[in-house]
Image (cartoon, rainbow, N blue to C red; front, side, top):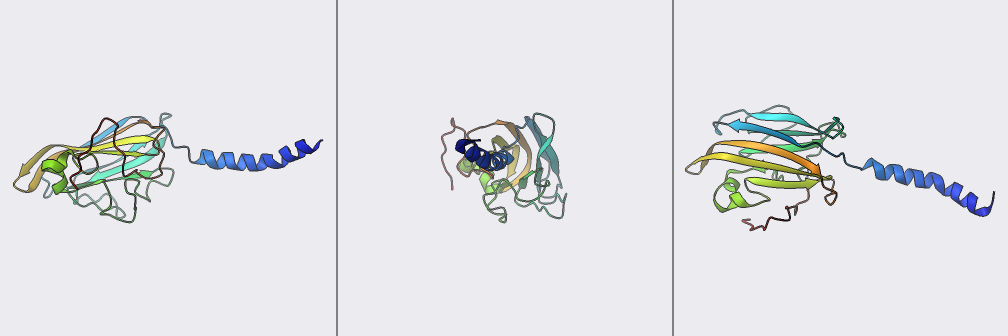
Length: 192
């Protein structure tokens, strides 16, 4: 055994450890999914969904939970605003950090929460906080939209909330949602 073989043999365990660590963060390639709910009376309907997003191999990858403030699926999840959505990694146990927030401990800093003011007038077209919100994280795109809205005065009366998960996006690799993520075709006019 020559000197180079000894160096290579000594470096091999380090290489294997680094490779294993890098592969541990390979996000699953998810299957496209569509989930929706209809809210007929936003002042009192306890409506929501708690669904699993599968990867292309049929394995559970993420858990998406959306609901009105009156929907109480779990004691560990609370809903506010007109509606609110959470995204959790099944790898992390299906509950834990809300991946739709840059600050998982903050309810108000969650783009998955829809406020009435953001669903009306000019703000409704905002890609970050309007009726149709784009989220990019972990190699996937998630679109959550509020449609078929009925507004009476200043109040949201009824609506449909839908969540769409899409393909692997190699250029979006952050652990939690990227604040600035917008589709390339969207020219954003901020209302905030």
